[in-house]
Amino acid sequence: MLRHQPRTESAGRLAGSSKLLRAMNESATLAHLLDRGTLTRGDLRELTGLSKPTTSDVLRRLTDAGLAIVVGHTRGGPGPNAEIYAANPAAAYAVAVSVKETTDLARPEFTAALVDLAGTVHARVHDRVDLVKADPLVAIEEIVGRLTALAGLDRTGISHVHLGVPGSYDADGGVIRHIDIAGFDRAGLVAQLGERLSASVAVENDVNLAAIAERGRGVAAGLRTPERAGGDPASSFALLWFGEGLGLAIDLGGSLLRGARGGAGEIGYVPVGLPGQGPRDMQELVGGPAVVELAAAHGLTASGAADAVAAAVDAAAHPATGAGGQAEAEKFLDELACRMGQCVGAVAGVLDPPLIVLAGEVAQAGGEELARRVRAAISSTIPLDITIAVTGIADDAVLLGAVDAGLRTVRDSLINALRANVPVG
Image (cartoon, rainbow, N blue to C red; front, side, top):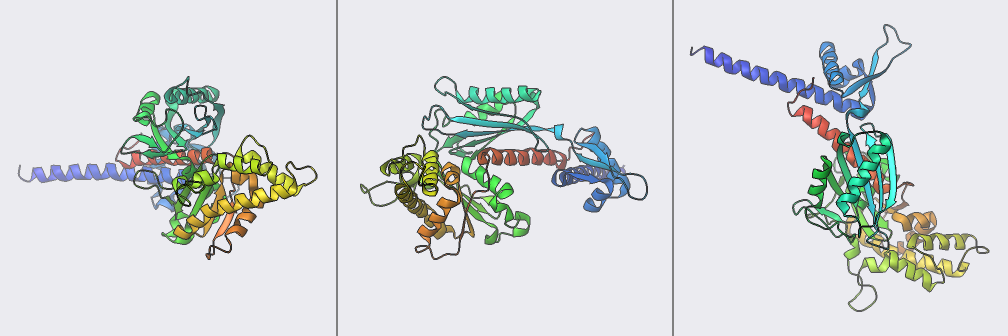
């Protein structure tokens, strides 16, 4: 009996190790399929170092569990055609929601998309929501319901919702801070949303999401990838958002700097000048209302900041047809560029990033013409070699960033579930 007890414990350890090894093999294989797209058994054996029988066994279990599928066969090579595997797009779905403030803070714009595990968009909606009549919880729940109906899915198929807001989420306090949109600063809102949707919910600052999109799809995509960066500052960049609001995202080698309570990058609150003399902070210097007011002072009438900038660029390029006259349009753009240059200079002086991206509706409306003037405005005051570029994202950058971040969350959760010694099949 004394000899039998150690053998039982050893057998238990071996069984546990076998399960753990199996889970590790499954998670590693799924991770490769998610990262690479399509792979054969041979590709996976080379990537994982697993034996031929083990690779086949892992793929069988992933396929039986609905996490992997056969998408085709190789052709033209010697021997039998090999099956080509991919992660099953229908294994999980996510919803990305971009919430954008307007001049009426009780009627923000919502843009949302439903994507599968492969990133394919199955439905997209855009609407302005009256938050005087509809609670934010109800508004988002209805949007998710519309998306699933358009995609022909049951709402229970949504495993994650990624929300982009013009504010910052304090996870410890369970509240969205620095946000002016009605109802979104209510404590417990995010947790309640997760309960109503029966899905995980993540909240991210809209400008941070724009930076995620810029890193993966825009002008920052040319920087070294986080895996190769090794913390090298050359892989970092800053994104300045010029729209109705003003914001800053700081990407340090692929990792976003969020601050102690999610408030890093709230550059609009940074004071400028002296009390009682001109604008109090950067938001009053170059936020949407300030841009419209500046444009009006130069004879350019527009309903919003981006429209004012677009009209000025057009007038500067086509003096015969442009509104407000070429001279006044030029003066407006130069003065706006000087104001934007103060924001760029502050970021450059503190962070010294190799790249600063100008994003948001105002920057997009101004394009390269406005960016050129910003470079000229700071050239004599910032003795640093920094590239200033206009965003490379033509679509809704916040929504695209929410899609990318949401997919990463869903994929990581699938991999982690396998890795946590919970084998499939």
